[in-house]
Amino acid sequence: MEGEMSNFFKVWLSVYLCLCYCYATAKLVPKGCTRLLCLLPIVCLFLYLPLFLSSIHLVGVTSFFISWLANFKLFLLAFGKGPLSSDPSISLGRFVAVACLPIKIQQSNPPQNSLDKHKNTQNDSIPSLPNQNNQFKENSSPAKSHQNTQNENSQQQHKENPPANHQNGPQKSHIDGQFKQNPHPSPPKSHKNGQNKENPIPQKPKQGHRVPLNNVTKGLLFGILLRAYDYSDQIHPKALLLLYSLHIYLLLELILAVAATLARALLAIELEPQFNEPYLSTSLQDFWGRRWNLMVTSILRPTVYEPTLDISRRVVDRKWAPLPAVLATFVVSAFMHEIVFYHMGRMRPTWGVTCFFLLHGICLTVEIALKKAWSAGRWRLPRLVAGLLTVGFVMGTCFWLFLPQFFRFGAHVKAFEEYAAVGKLFRDLISPFVSRVR
Image (cartoon, rainbow, N blue to C red; front, top):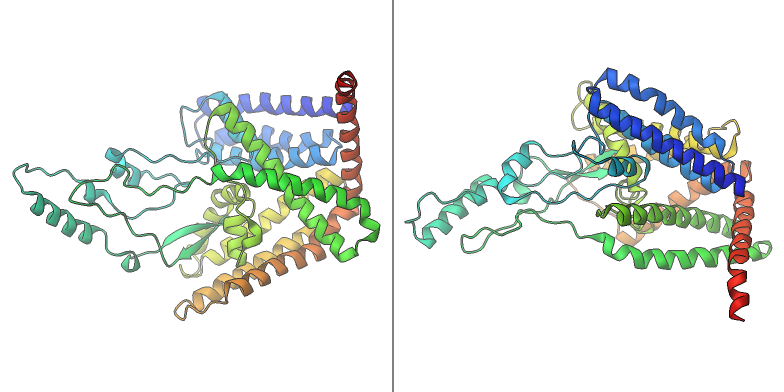
């Protein structure tokens, strides 16, 4: 265990030094192919570093953090895009944290007097908003009465901001590197008595404030789940598969929460949530786009979905262009999952994970196509029925294609051995203190 922790420290020290090089490269080398050539050795090294680890948990976390997320962020950095390029004055500490941790900094609202600039230079991570600039235009004639001012502002607001259901184009919401048409965008905020409100742009509710309580609850559930494995001989095999699926979800969410808590404490920044209660999903779009592992969603969107969408628009009708982009996103996600599984098991892939993601990509594409074709009828299943069908489909395909890939290299056995080793280490550490108290 001590040797593994030493290797883990060396690997992450190497990651830090590599990211310092990338930080300097971004400052000195112009964006484009030249910068990409300078960063490619780091990308290759990040694919190799997890092979120095053998712990199923440490190698899985390292592979996901640097071989996938960090590498994709470096590809975006090479062309002046992505979270590492959004702030030219970013500090080294924040650059390293954003590059190697699965975090996304929550965007703050721009000042009121910069709304025009915000509209034209809007960052990819900020959703589009209704045009509200003319609501806050100053009255050039101070002699006008309050009533005239109110009427003029109301007419101008109606002219520039028609009701939400009459806008030319619907807003787009984030869908696992894809976009979903939203038929009901939020209407712009109105002002009262001809006065401008101090915060014209609607703020997202800060979901981060409810995360600690949820994480404590999920941590307790994870502990109870580990104890339940002591009775695995008396549990039905199908029920055991359900426990394994719950185990993976809780472990992944807790690991991401720990990484986000660490970044929030060290950098004093507000972060966007990584999960959004995926068990409440009512469609595959809802599951993959707005609820499951949103860090992957946010990095696949600019690296895979948007470039493929631009190419698709030149070939097929604009209405159907998102479909090949959705499928391409799942193909890339499948390939990256295969790399993570190879790092953990060091076994030749059987492509079961790829089949899992291709199946979901095809089904999601069909779901989007059906919704586009039936959008006029607005026929929908009841929420409870849609939720049961969605979660049932995800769990069923997970039992069939995804979980067997863990069993191939005994991931569950290795995980229990590591839990036992950590428990023994913890008991050895606290035993002197317990003996003193006695």
